[in-house]
Length: 165
Image (cartoon, rainbow, N blue to C red; front, side):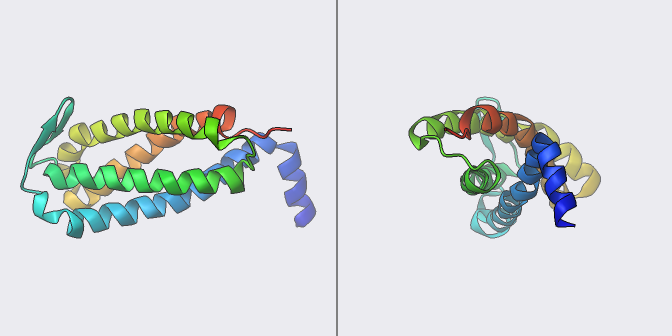
């Protein structure tokens, strides 16, 4: 079994790396959901009746209000911090300078952040009507996670998490 695993890893290095990226992203995903659920139901629950509108973000009461905005914000931030550490060492084995890697990662995360904070403003209310608040929040979060993978993986692989000789 070890030989088959090692042969697969060597013959399909990029595919193996992508699989490992997704497997270890689950650590960040679990953190994301835990923080989202905790912050929405406990930490910020008192703010769910307060609408929040800023720029393209419309977190009306129907969209979860300020509680939803702050919960998505906090859960994304904490999950990305966890993801950076896990991906850098375990998946990519990066040894490049943090001085160059961290600013690029932060810009990427900020861009993804802006997108993923917008998605609930268009997805949460319709999904709530169909699935209820709990499932709509989690389905919206799943959409955000897919968007994150599609953007962050290539940036990490080709720009941020490089191995230097």
